[in-house]
Amino acid sequence: FKSAVLAGRHVVVTAGPTREALDPVRYLSNHSSGRMGFAVARAAAEAGACVTLISGPVTLSTPAGVERVDVTSAADMEAAVNRVIDDADIFIATAAVADYRSAQPAAQKMKKSTDGLILSLEKTPDILGQVAERRPDVFTVGFAAETEQLETYARAKLTRKRLDLVAANQVGDGLGFGVEDNALSVYWADGSRELERAPKEQLARALITLIVERFYAQHPD
Ligand code: PMT
Image 1 (tube, rainbow, N blue to C red):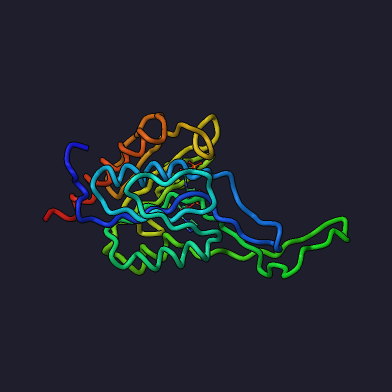
Image 2: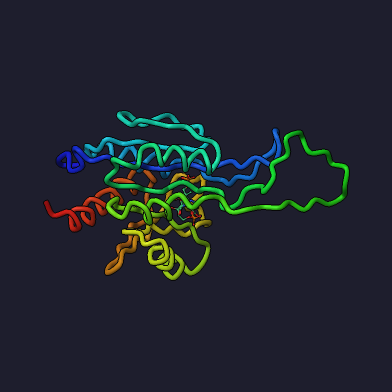
């Protein structure tokens, strides 16, 4: 970045998967590696922001100059976000938060005494939705991972959750979860931009450049 365009700004980024316990030894989760979120946190720090990175279980090292908070479940991630969101300017939700968790995690290891097993699940807290609702002054960026109808589903998230920006990635075909590269279609109320396929580090810089543009369009001072 040519100058520290985000100097004096606090950016909060969520990254990685969450793990939702079924019992003391098993959990529900997904294939997020945290790479996209860590790259976004690094790019925001390079742009001069003070960055808090709240990450689910991943095996990545913390980018230079970034404050990292490790969490396990969606409930932990929600609590960690709530602890820092009060003085945030920008919230970027890159995490693949598990949408459901066990309604009653077992206190002891579940026994495989039956042939089949029906799990009762409940929704996890919508961390991004809550921030957008309770803190309309924070510039909110959601991610959307879709396997079909990218624009329709991404725009639905933008409107329903009242976000400022949605970065949508088509998953599969060597893109999205776990892999090196990604491509993003970014949508806001009256515009969109395609960020072409690139390594996540490079793509994250392009995304931060766009976020800066849209953020200062809303905060012209
Ligand atoms: O980690 P990598 O391996 O690099 O992979 C990157 C990625 C594919 C995980 C990432 O680019 C991505 O797309 N993340 C969002 C995944 C997703 O499907 O999100 P969603 O459609 O479930 O949720 C939409 C948005 O709401 C996301 O910004 C998510 O962080 C947020 N959310 C979702 C559920 C929930 N309970 N709380 C949330 O905050």
